[in-house]
Length: 229
Length: 409
Image 1 (cartoon, rainbow over the protein chains, first blue to last red):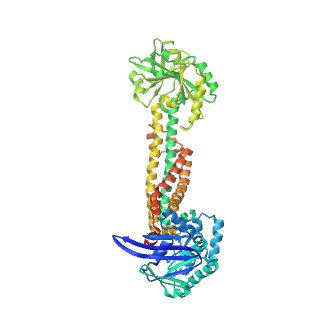
Image 2 (cartoon, rainbow over the protein chains, first blue to last red):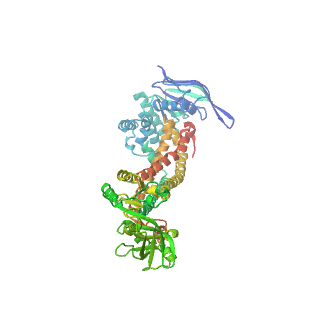
């Protein structure tokens, strides 16, 4: 099966005040449609950077990123935004829901950015909330939800948009272990039942037992890879 | 996006209320100021045209004609009938100005004898405004005159006394005696020192039978400066019945200096509006910018989720539009109510009314605002909203998602 996302010889160097800090040093990575992949590694290993580059949030210093058959790294900010809007879903460590919107409005937000009318986006967002068992909280704002609930809404936001791939950057880092595991189970079910492709990062070794494919990253390099998607 | 923008505006409720309140104040203030300037303009216009009329018929280039008889309109009675037939609702009055020598028992002065129709608007205006003693002039069995008080003093005549008018070389009697029936306190002392008002018939018999220096037309439907079309239509109608050698002037052409003063108020109001909205705009910039700074992380998320630069800018501008339009709506209601109340008539407080009356303002004024001015105020508000949001919107549009999401407020 063809890769849905692919990175070739990816380098990323951060420059600040004349100091260069390499974050990625020649990473080759790919994920096929329907895979459930974890990128594991300690803090500072380059997991977030890799996800940001794969998702088109940032540009590599060197190397290529391909998403759904389109090269991403040479595109303008506006073109990358368009690709993210239509092909990528994101789940962030800090949930990053929009505080003034309800759970339902948050779940529908990407669809609204795509310009879908309320008659289309609301049923899709509601259905996504149902998948994450958050339908009873649809009218609540993020500050009225627990961390685990907020993260489920964030996953629902990604799910409602039906992206080619969902990048989740340490989605369980702010959750207790039980809630974190439950979230991973939700993601796995969506992967299994909906065929949604997930690439997520974690530094929690307990979660890795629940993932079939794990890519280990250290000091900006892939040092090991286990399992298949 | 509209919903999100609206919710974001009310997230910082206190700050938004202050800013929207400032916009409301500016909009209300501008509507009231436009209403006031309309009241002043219309008041001055009304005062001015009470003495000049709205249209004026005279000999072509009359100001350049030196000879008295060449400056006269002939067959006035017939001409007035034709004008009345063309403009049936208009009041038409003839005025005859006769340069003459006016003498008392011991002294004489060069004077202008102003012949007015005794039952006309001009005489009524003269009596109401300037007659300080005695009666208006009549042309019955005995002729009488109302003299400028300064002229009466110069001639050493008093009420009930007699003055003698000499207008040699004219087509009338050339000389006549008048009883001093009234005294006038005219606004300009030089005019007061050389003006005597007579009945039109008396002036005509003295110097120019069935003639006039000018025919003044009052259009009852003309109440404001804005009714330009009405004035022009009447002018065209009048010009069609006027014999060759005469011209029809509007009050503007007859009094260009005063018309210019009235016209100047409009650009001045525009400058005031610009200044006020610039000040309100600074407050809006501050609010929108602070709102952006506090939400950089959130903007980062929105960009990460796929909003491009223009979408983010659109969101910031929408927030500014909500902020300003909610203020403008409240200001529009408050200002509109104030103008509506003032349109029913108001006076300046205390002694101000009398002081300003000397500059031609009526004691009771009526606020007036045109739809164009209302549209202008709201257009300025909309422009303020967009212009104030441009810089913060530009900054938001330039945010890099990864950096923005790492931002700590």
